[in-house]
Length: 122
Image (cartoon, rainbow, N blue to C red; front, side):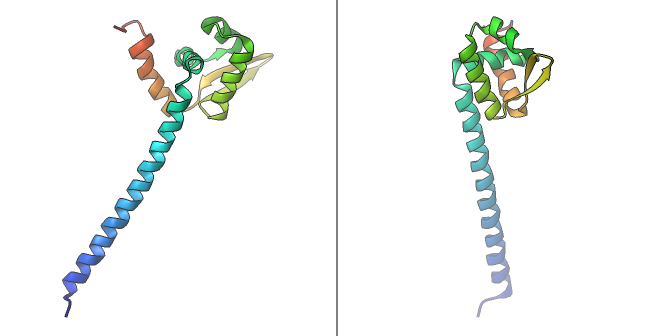
C-alpha cells in the first residue's frame, strides 16, 4: 500500500519537473532572442551605425557622414536594423531620424560603446 505522503511527493516532483520544463523553454527562447541580436550586431557596418545611435538620435545624412558608409549600403543596413526591430524611425519633413528602439540592443550597445568606442577605452 502506498502512503498519502508518497503521493504528495510524486505530485511535488511533477510540479518541480513542470516548473523546470517551463523555465528551460523560457531560457531557450531568451537564448534564441540573444542569438538573433548578436547576429545582427556581428556586421561591422551595422555595429558602426548602432555605435553612433548609442549617442542619440541621428538623421540618415548625419549617419552617412559619421560612419562613411555609401548610401546604398547605408540604406540596406538600416533596413536590416528596422526589420529586426532594433531601431525605430520618425520622419520630420524630408528627413528620417533613427534611434535605437530595442532596450536589449541599447543595453548591449552601451557596454560595447563603453568598452570599445568611449573616451575611457584602453
